[in-house]
Amino acid sequence: MLIQSLGVFERVFPDGMTTGRCLLISLVGFLIVFAVLSVIALFVKGMGAFFDAKNKKTDSVAEKKTAEAPAAAPAAVSPAYSGPELDGVTEPEAAVIMALVSHESGIELNRLKFNSIRFKEEIKK
Image (cartoon, rainbow, N blue to C red; front, side, top):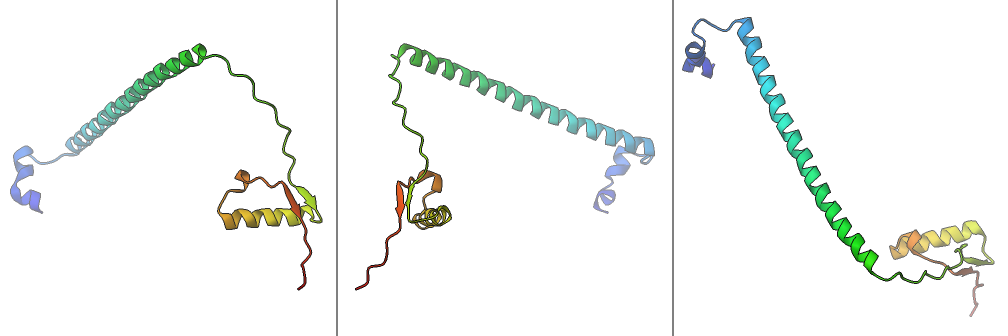
């Protein structure tokens, strides 16, 4: 092996590697990794606390501005939307029509509002 040919082990451990030395080196390696991970965890926790404190300050400023602003008049309550008015169309057919319109237009179904769906007979020429 390359390391053995360079004589690294002979210089560091002239009387050879024993089981005890192997375990000690492994233990020291594990402790170093654990210490570095602990430092990283403390750093991340500190950054989280810093940004939480910063967000609380901006929230308190926003609350002060809203408290100083005059109260807005309550919005008019609109009646609940109960769905489109169906004229000559069953509910399953209306559901298919709404899904097709949503798919073809590329607009999500919850962003569309259908006022009415009516059946029209074909006009023959």
